[in-house]
Length: 224
Image (cartoon, rainbow, N blue to C red):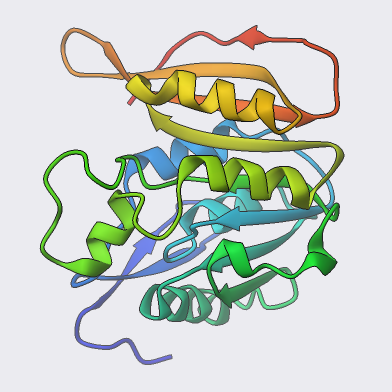
């Protein structure tokens, strides 16, 4: 397979798998890898919302063989990169890429997923400085989808007992908990990620389960 001049191969360091990135498009951060490692091991169907070039879903597959993953990405160029990565690694039997907003996932997918993963836009639409590149702004700000929409849609797509794993900036932690509760998802695992010399938490990872009794577990913080 021929890479374009602006494309780069990055090693996932698992079974020789690699992911294709474009230096001119939004590139994933280590938060995505933390999320894929935080998610529980399941056997079944997995959805990766706001998947970008596919890092969360592909990395999750790499460490949890036996699952199938549907990648959902709004932006055409990023979805195409995901497709290219799937082809490069010969993963077509296990991972599919869909170029669509998650609001358009068909109702046939309701109640079908055992796990939904999402590394969402962190910033509300009118908060913080907006990147002048629209494709990057879409990944960082809630322009095309909001946190509440993500959680509501995930709840519909999950099976009973299915899990949503999502990461977000610490200051929006309560937004996750409130929206999970409102949509019948019970927060069951929480982990904070720290960074910098003071080890200050900057990221929270949350797992919510559909239709289960309260069973919250707080994991030790992890450095990044």
